[in-house]
Length: 506
Ligand code: XMP
Image 1 (tube, rainbow, N blue to C red):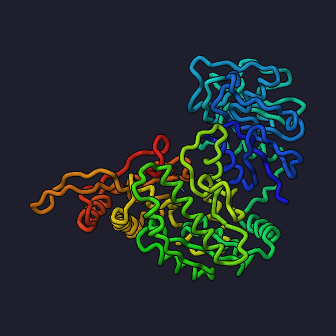
Image 2 (image 1 turned 120 degrees about the vertical axis):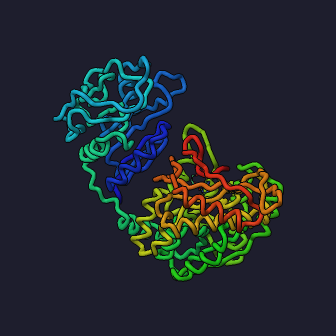
Image 3 (image 1 turned 120 degrees about the horizontal axis):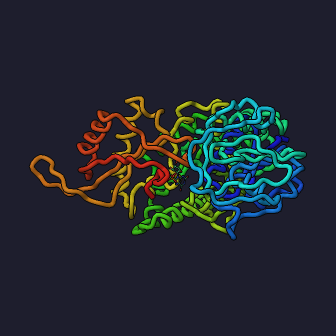
């Protein structure tokens, strides 16, 4: 069985990043809520305590009993995790004069300490905390400071426990990967987390779990569900039927293209035309979360109908991935958007759910796809939201608006491919705004729709930045859309990053 690090999540924005970094170092890890350390945990080789939006002195702060982990496993506390380790042992944590945010340089590094090996004397680290540890308990030894913080890092004598008040998981901490790697060395990690090892373990597990049961898979055309399909096909062969629903919210000609691609992969795919069903359910609905829920529920209804038509189907497979799981189940209770893969499922469902990729990040899914010998154009496809154009038509959805958006989107995406920009962009699309603007075409006044182009770079969709696409390209696309797409007389470009915006507009 695969060994793992457990990350106890105290609600920090960067908890996911910790997991990503460990996986980049080929070590498997799982994030669990701060108070849900698994009983009888097997194959756990170390524990990381994440940061938190709270101060340890807040009445509502998360303060679990750490006796089941401290002294039993190697432990690394990060930011709040480090402050809580100190605080819960009798140390003092107080509000700093101005807090410490952004870059800082380490000083007085104890180079003999196992955690600080090969980190140099003045490494740059990233800080983000209002509180600071002002008094360390007995047996806590400082192993690095900064100009403002005496205990930027410490170890606890007699235990394999460390605390760092900086964030080794963020890119701006130059020595971040070294510190995490040093911690993994203390954990004696074997570094055996690779796409090939994942595939082997996943296929074994699926064979055991599914036996001779029949499975239907919800295909979306995206990389996640495609990889999921190929993986399941390897595990259960002809017992897998893939269902690809045309919900009327797909990109132009996407339905035909996707069916063709999957048949090439040897998968058994049924294409279902449910356009009318979705348009009826969505008629007049403007509220984004309601639209998402309706679309999510629509998918499940159709899958259940299809499952009933095919006798003996017990399982519904989905290509849900880790960020969907984490974003939907945030421990601080803030749900930004309910991603239909996770949030929109009805409480009662006749099919059992199976999600073989639910612990993978997007880049890992792509690596798994390559290892499964899937074609590059399928693997590099931009992410596309489950609710499709439904969340890119702001306000109510109608077939005519879908037609306008599909035509504009097709011009933009084909253009990105022609100009060799497609692979430099994480995700792109067009949004149909719920406003009309005045224009002039020939001698005629027009009063028509405005569309926004959006193109972002990202590594995991948790944060994103808009792409500085060449002006000549934007000019050409704008011109082509306005000339060719009936109903559009203005094109704008979205220059917002995430946060504070999100990638999709709804
Ligand atoms: P946001 O808009 O939250 O999007 O910045 C982050 C990533 O998730 C995609 N997205 C969705 N995917 N169902 C999905 O399967 C959804 O409801 C959904 N909403 C957003 C979005 O396209 C981006 O890649």
